[in-house]
Amino acid sequence: IGSIWWIEVIARDPPIARKFYGQLFEWNARDTSFDPFAVYTVFERPGNQEAGLLPLQPEWEIEPMWNTIVSVDDCDRTMNRAPGLGGQMGFVHTVPKHGRIGGIFDSGGASLVLRGPVPAAAT
Image 1 (cartoon, rainbow, N blue to C red):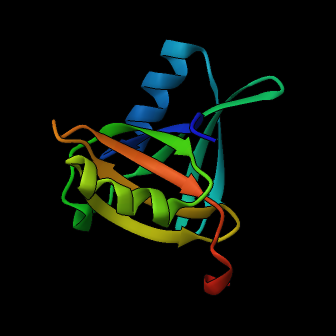
Image 2 (image 1 turned 45 degrees about the vertical axis):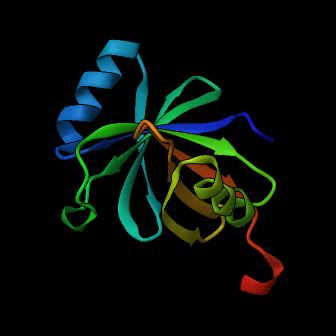
C-alpha cells in the first residue's frame, strides 16, 4: 500500500511509442486485451512485466504522458482526501479484474493515478 503498482505510457501513436520505448529500454512488447481497449501493450523482459502502453483516447483531453499508478487500500477514500489537502480529484472508475482506478492532482498540478480494490458495494 502506498507503493508503485504499475507504470504506463499513454500515447497518441502506440506503434511509434511501442518501437521507441521497446528499443530504448530493450523491452519485448506483447499485445493483450484490456477492457475496454481492444489492444493494450505490455512491455516485458523475460519473466518480468515492466510497463504498459495505453492508446490515448481523443475524449480524454490530455497530452501523451507516463502514468505512475500507486496501490492504495481504498481508492475512493484516498481520492476524497485530496481536496482537503489542496489537490483535486480527477476521473475514477472500476477496471474489470484490476480494481478501482482514480486520478488526482496535487496543488502544483502534478497527476497521480491510484489503484485499490473494488469496494464491496460496487460488486
